[in-house]
Amino acid sequence: MIVYWQIKNQTFEYSGLDSFDNCRDKEHFKNYKKTISYKFNSWGCRDNEPPKNLDNLIWCIGDSFTLGLGQPFEETWPQLLEKKVNIRCMNIAQDGCPNDMIAIRAKEILEKYNPKKVIILWSFLHRRFKDGNFLHFDKDNNAEEDLQNFIKNFNFINNYQNIFNYIIPNAFVDAQAKTLKNNELQKLLESKIIGHINVVKQVDVSRDGLHFDIETCNMLVEDILSRLK
Image (cartoon, rainbow, N blue to C red; front, side, top):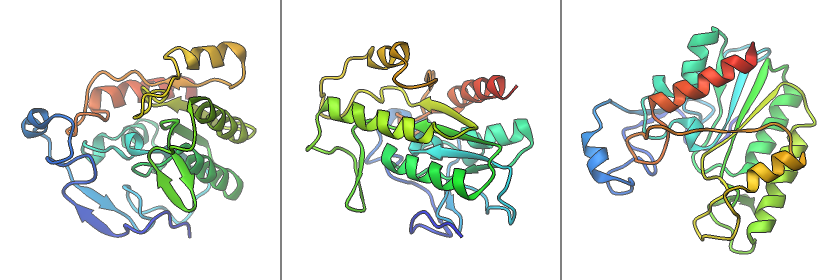
């Protein structure tokens, strides 16, 4: 059995950035009306318990934008997708997950199971998995090294089949204002250094003031459905 991290079989009212002290907009947080809780299953994932047969599922891999930080569980995009396609969509996202770890998890799923699809929502380029830890910002790397690390992870995983690639808004803009320009991703696409990837367009924010809320998740799901067809 895969176990991803140590918060297993626990439920919380708040998590990470989704708390009054840590949120981006305290007024928005106070006025957010929907009820939220974070229930983590035996794998340490914010999802229902996994089925016994893990073949032919849709796997959703990413960071807090996929976990659904700041929004009700039933409104996260993997849950919305599951209801639309009537296929179990396994959410194995983790708050703060760097692209290095996203690639590791995707490779494990692709090699151990027979996934119907793997949907990756890639994270901020400046994050790293280093010495067994998640680093929100690795001061030892500059913007170009962040970019090359992302290209490495992306191309490594996309040697496999059945993958849909998305990337969070502002993934190329990091906390320390390193020098990547906003059009860097478009240049990558045009140069064919990386394959097809969609930047998610965000139209609303969850309780914490940063992550997706229901409208953005619905738009993402509609795009996934169009590609599944």
